[in-house]
Image 1 (cartoon, one colour):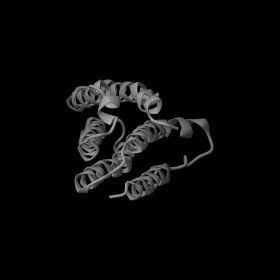
Image 2 (cartoon, helix red, strand yellow; image 1 turned 90 degrees about the vertical axis):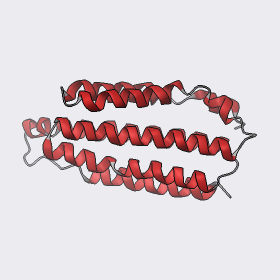
Image 3 (cartoon, helix red, strand yellow; image 1 turned 60 degrees about the vertical axis):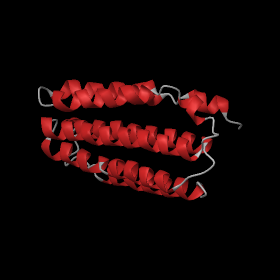
Length: 190
């Protein structure tokens, strides 16, 4: 099966997710700086979410670039990843409505955990569909993927103690991924 449809569909869904995220941002109700400062938490949640969705999209792009084929398992794993990414606007909205509170911050971590786990499943499915690919060598032990999931799993219950350390973990995981993994770029022909 050709991988082009998977790439095009994923690009379309991610574009819609990002569009919904930005449409959820509300302009301040007044023209003073205090109103702008009041909307800062939801804007920062949007910015972090934009970076997170962008990281998943960027790594998805690189991973599919390394693949030649996709099969049904890849399609379902890709849909599972897109399901969790499509929930990002919901948790941002909840943070906007409820504030930086335990439930919404924990839910944000649950969505990121789901996205991380399903990305790992997608990666395994792509490797299985492309046994002669360089992807297993490029992925290696996938310490970043595993440590991201562990970080998210720590942050979820931690949010019920205090949401801010959980947010710090989400930011730290994003910072770890912000620079793309160059192993794939160096290995593949341009």
